[in-house]
Image (tube, rainbow, N blue to C red; front, top):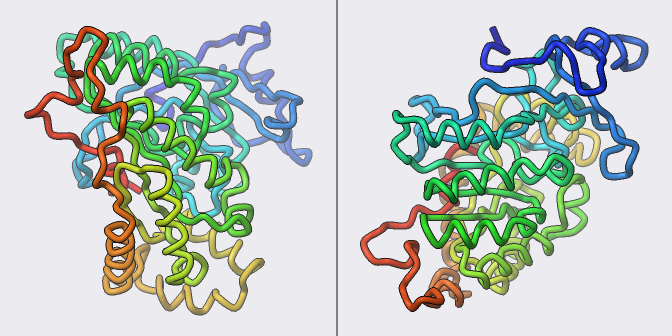
Length: 366
C-alpha cells in the first residue's frame, strides 16, 4: 500500500477523527482524494500559508534508502515533507505526489504532507545497532527548508540528532530559512562532515518570478551561501536548472556565474533542465501560456525523453566551467573553515585524510 510506511492516529489533537477531517476538507464542492485515514488536515490564515493545506502524519520510518537503480552517490535520505510550496514549475519531484492520489500540479504546490514525528524518528534510527553512520542527504526530493519549516521546525530536531550522533550529512536548498539553524550547522561541523549547497539556476528577476514564485529571491539565496561559508559551513551552488532558450544565453550564464563567484561559493555545478513525467506536463503547460513560441523548440529538444541532447548539456557545462575558472570559484577556502577551534585543534571537517563530498553531488538525483 502507498501509505504502509506511515502510522496515522485515529484522532487529531483538536479531537476530530480523521474521516471528519477528510470530509471537512473540500475543494470546489468535491472531496479531495483520500490522503489517509486519521491524517490531521490544517490550514492557516496567514499570508505565507494562504491556500495551503498541511496534512500532519506520523511516519513509521524517516531515514530512507535510495533504490540502487537511481545511480546516485549516496544511499540514504531524510525527507520530512512531501509536496513543496516553492511551486517551481519545473520541479522533478511533482510525479511523487501522484503516489498519494494527489495531482502533480496544484496539489503538489498546495497540499503538503508533514511528518510531524520526523525528529524523534531520526534520533531513534541513528541509535539503532544496525545503523553504520552513513552519509545522509537532505533536500533531494522536496526542499526541507520550504515555508512549512518556519512553522513546524522539524529540521532543528533533525540537525540536533545528526550532530549528537556525529553523523555526516548534506543539505541542498532554495530556502533562506536554513540560516535559522546556523548554530546547529556549525556545531555539527565541529564533529562530522557537513556539506551544504543552494540552488540558483539563474539570477534574472523576471524569470525567477515566473518559474519559482514561492522561493526566496536568487540574490537572497546567494547571501545564504556567503553567510554559511563565512561561518565555516562549506557551501556551494547547484546552478540548476538552466532553462534552454530562457536562461542559457552567454550573457545570462556569465551574469549568474559572476554573482555566484561574488557570493564566495565553494563550488558551482551546472545542471540543464530535465523533464520527467509529471514535471514535463506541468512545465509545458506553463510554457504554452507564457512563451508559446518556445514550445516547438522544447518539443524538439526533449522529443526523445526527459533530458536535453548530450551535446547541448556538454556545451553548457563547458561554458559554466570556463566562467567559473575565470571568476576563481573554488580557489579560495572559506575564511572561517580555516580557523582553529577555541581549544586550538582543527575541526573534523578540516582534518586531512577525510575526502569531502560536496552537497552538489546530490544533483545527480535531480
